[in-house]
Amino acid sequence: MLFEVRGISKRFGKITALEGVAFQVQPAEVLGLIGPNGAGKSTLFECLAGVLPCDSGEIPPRETLFYVPDGICPWPGQSVRWALDFTLGFLGGDPSLRAEVIEQMDLAPVLSQRIGTLSKGQRKRVLLAIGLLTRQPALLIDEPFEGLDLRQARDIASALRVHALRGRTLFLSIHQISDAARFCDRFVLLNHGRVRGEGTVAELASLAHLATDDLEEVFLALT
Image 1 (cartoon, helix red, strand yellow):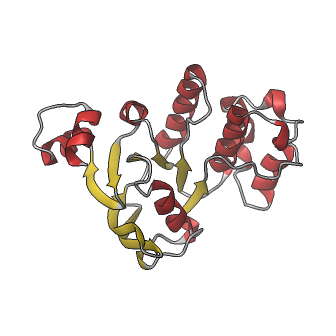
Image 2 (cartoon, rainbow, N blue to C red):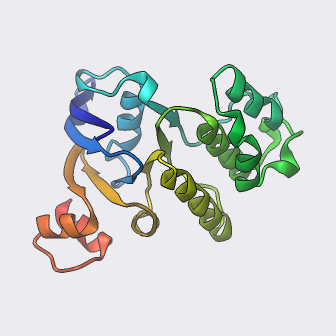
């Protein structure tokens, strides 16, 4: 086990965003966090990363994980090259991965461009590259395929799998259950701020008393 989350709860006024969330994360796995809009996925990631304080519960040490949010534009006035070099220098990234990650994320054509001028898909690839260059054993990635077309999403999925096979743990928040089913090894099902199931598709199907390998059917039964 790489780390365990125990009893995370988070409230915003009278609204309970997370309640008693608990699960385990294993080394070198691709773990999918799935749930409908408003389930608490982004809040959970922000609590795990220390962006938001938890009201209660135990989270992993900061040095265990690196958080890649969705929809942000870091250092908009700086070039892509500068952002990658900053990651390697100030954030203590792995320089041996630089050339490979640039190729995997298809960033060579935009290295000199300012991040603020990039398209949504290009910014997503820059964010993923920053995450992959860091040294933390686990990456939390919010919506890794958002803004990518089908071919790009498949290429990115293949690249992420390479890093997982080398021992990197990937914990991915994915809205599209079909994408999660194709890519993830295990799943944490979240709904209304509570974990409704954790495990492989077969384990979740057993929990739901279903004889199926359809993750969507299992998800609907458990949530």
